[in-house]
Image 1 (tube, rainbow, N blue to C red):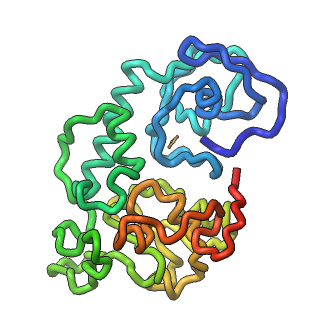
Image 2: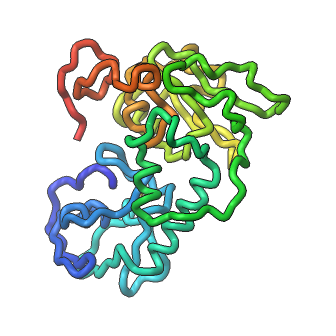
Length: 273
Ligand code: FES
């Protein structure tokens, strides 16, 4: 969605038949939200700059070719936007189908079950079937290394199964785990680390099925990286890729303070807008 536009000249447009007036520079997605219209999204969040990578938020704009991402498209006076046309609904289902085809189907035992944006958005776009063969990346698909609820130690490097490209989950941080098999590469963790925390500890390395979040090109794991365990990345993650160990082991967060630093013992209740 992108951070809110600073006060600017008012711009009026029409979204799904509703007239909306927002400050100049506002994204179409945020303008739709102002009108009470939810556009499906995965890489956008309220407190991060728009990124435009997941393509779930595409819309149609009269007089404009293609289907632009609403999170990165600024409003213009007189714009007429359609967020629920048959065309964009079909595109969103196709995009979601690709995400799910490369994601473990272990929702019932996943620590994020019921609190997973991928799960929610798959339902929101009406995905019912996946036509593609799952498990194309190099991460553990055996189930042997899948994080079992109640036992964060269930995953271990010895789950190699003979695949030289196999990448196990990273359990090195005392507070959270990183499970690459559940990552949708939305970049929210990387942006949270940069924009919210200013630590710049994370990056995306590799391409295609080999792409993964990395805690620095020169380090093997989160613990030996520049990560300061602030938890901003965990809060930003829409799936169980970055998950608190207390949630995995006990089903609940260790703390529930409202702060940008999830593991801060102070809990100053500061919330980034
Ligand atoms: Fe707009 Fe991801 S939410 S491209």
